[in-house]
Length: 220
Length: 268
Picture 1 (cartoon, each protein chain N blue to C red):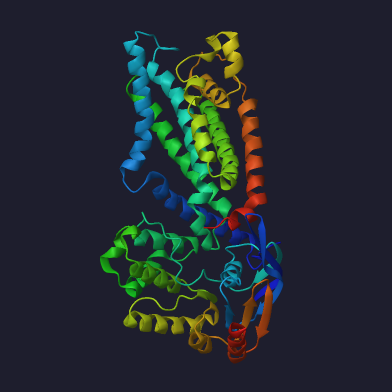
Picture 2: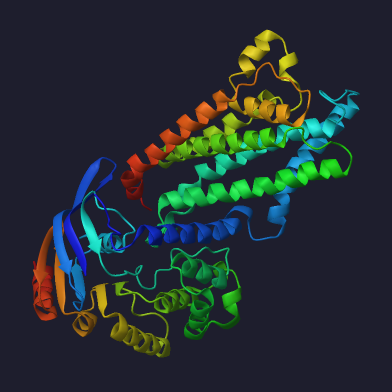
C-alpha cells in the first residue's frame, strides 16, 4: 500500500515557478498495478521520484507500507571508474542484501562475461543497461517502479527480461509504470492516472478507460 | 512534510544508516583517491615531499630548526593539520555535486554522502599521522609525543573545523558555481599564515595581531603544545577554532537542510 496525501510539488527555474502537483491524493492498494500517462512535462518522472523517495514533496506526505524499488533499469547511479562488480556490490550493500548472491544473479542475467570486472566507463550502452536491469531484478521489492525501460538489448535478452520480470511480479505483486506504449499498459496495469500540465490529475479504475482518456487527451 | 519510513523501527533505521554509510565509505575510497593503488600512496607522499622541500630550503640557507632539534618534526607538526584541514574542507565542499546521481537510490540521503566522506578523510589522516610521526620516531628524528591526548584533541578540532568550513562552502557552491575557485585562491596564502615554518609567538606584536585571526594557526600551535614538552605558545586559544568550527557546522548543516528542496531543483 502506497498513499500520497495532499502532496504539492513545484519547481523554480530562474524565477519562473512551475507547479507540478497541487495537493495530489492517490492511494495504490496492494494488488493494484498503476499506469501513469501524460504528455512530456506533465510530471510523470517527478511522481516516480516522489514515490521512490528520491525526492521530497514541498508539502504533504507519502506513506509506504511496502518496499519500493528505484526506477527499474536506472543506470545513472553507476560510477564509471568502478568496475561492474564494485557497482553491484555497492547497491546491494545499501539495500542490505547478500552481495555474493546479488552478484551471482547479475552475472547470470546480464551475460556480459569478463566485462563485469572492468571499469564501467568501458561499457557499451547495451552492457550498462543489461547490468542495470539485472541489478534491479536481483533485489526483491514489494513494488517495482518502471519508467519506460522494458525494452533493453536484443530480442533474446528482451524475452529473457520479460520472463524474469513476470516471475518477479508473481512474487512481488505490484508495479507502478510510466509508459507511452498502450500494449505494455494493457498487459501489466489494472488502474491508472492521467496527468495534465499544471497539476490536473484524472483517476481511472481500469486500463481501458485510461487509454481512452489518453487518446482523447492527445487529440485535444 | 515527511516522507514516512514509519514502518521501520528505530533499530532498523539505525541499521539502515550504518549500512548506507558503510557502503558509501567503501565507494568514496575509490572516488576520492582514484582507481590506482598510487592514489592512497600519493596522500602520504605529498606531505612528506613538502616537509622535505622545507628542510632542503632551510639547510641551503644555513638556518637552524625554528624550534627544538629536529627540522623534520617541526615542519611535520605544521604540515599535518594544514593538509588535513585543506583536504577535509575541499572534499566536503564538493560532496553534493559528486554524489547527486546516487540520490536516485532512495535509502541514500544527501547528509549520508557528507558524513561518509568526512569519515573517510578522518580515517585516512589517522593513518597518515601515524605513518609520518611513526616514521620520524623510527628514524630518530623525533621523540614520542609528550601528551598524545592533546595531539589527538588538536586533530579532532582540525577535523571539526574542516568539516564546518567545507559544508558551509558546499551550500554556497550549490548556488554560486564559481565559489570553489574563489575558495581555492583564498586557501593558497594559508601556507604562509599558519606558522608552518616559524614560531609565531616569537614574531613581533604587529604580525601576531594579524596571524592570530587564522584558526588553522591555533590548531597547529595546539598540536605543537601537545607534541613538545616545552613548546609554549602565547597565541593558542582552543576556544577560537572550536567556536568557528561549531558555528560553521551549524550554519552549514542548517543551510543544507533549508536549501535541500531548492538545490534538488537545479537539476541537469
